[in-house]
Image (cartoon, rainbow, N blue to C red; front, side, top):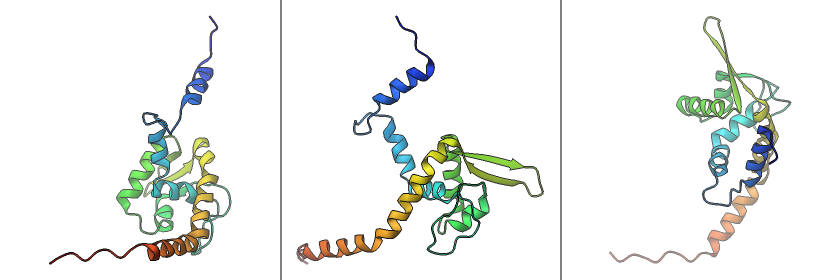
Length: 154
């Protein structure tokens, strides 16, 4: 019997994952990373501190403070951002560093695992921004082809 290293056993198990199969545990991870706020946080962790409306997240990832992320991600509630960051930290995609200052300074940074998703999330965000008008046009054309709903009797 051949002995395998832990890395070889993990690689074998990972090769068996198939998100198209109902019971595959990779579906949970896929659901997690496809969440709107997760995708936006992973795309937002970037180098340059400015983010003019409509601009892409420029540069390479860098640590960001909670308040920076909160300002950048318009519409995210404090509760949702906190939950999202905790989940990303638990999953090993983001690391949290607290520095003893007054008040305490907390920064979030992509881990190597999170960095491996960073470009994909930025590309997904960019695709959505680039193709939104096309999608709206297709929706309007589709809706125009649908029959009007039947009137309900009073």
